[in-house]
Length: 261
Image 1: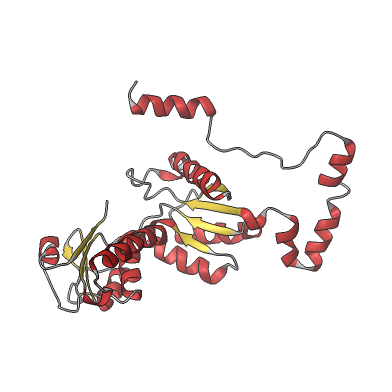
Image 2: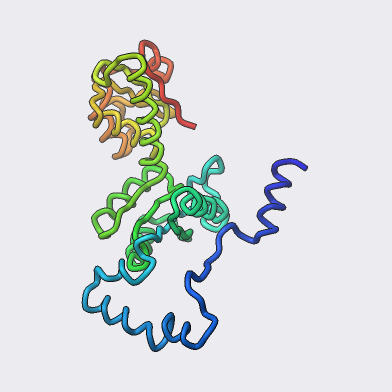
């Protein structure tokens, strides 16, 4: 059996990788009176009086929404919200199995940042955090920034911040082994999407001075007329030697090369 066939059989057998299970018994009328009516009115009234009590009496503090529009699904590209669900379920089980965090997929059937932001803002009361997943650049930057301003809970973009944390951690350890400092490095980064831009910003925040970012058309520099707003911003922060040309030109002379998938 091929991996594809095995994966299809695996998913079909379980009909989805996540489920909702009760944390409390529902065996007696007393159980139901406490978990539901009339007892449930007590925590409702407490939360109404003091909204912060929602973290005492509900699952909000340990519940994350995994939000996508299905436009940049890992290795698959723009496959849409519906087809993205297996991946989002996969992310939910990673949260649960490796961190003990409950997570639920929210696949938004729109590519419009306005719709995504509005949807997430409206469901904020249920969740303690938002994990943005597989939303294509540059829209993902707008969605993230707008949600950070609109919500009172943490907003994390996996493709940006998750990748950047791992890349930076690896580089910190490598530099420690060779006895070098971020300020001494010449870094070339391949890929100017969500991950590449976030990795570059992390490197700069950690003291790197000479970072060159490349996209499919070559080196990003201030004189390029075809840059979108996100790339214009990163062009102003990078490439202090004004290198032009291809990725190969950026790599030439670099101490570190960080490549994107």
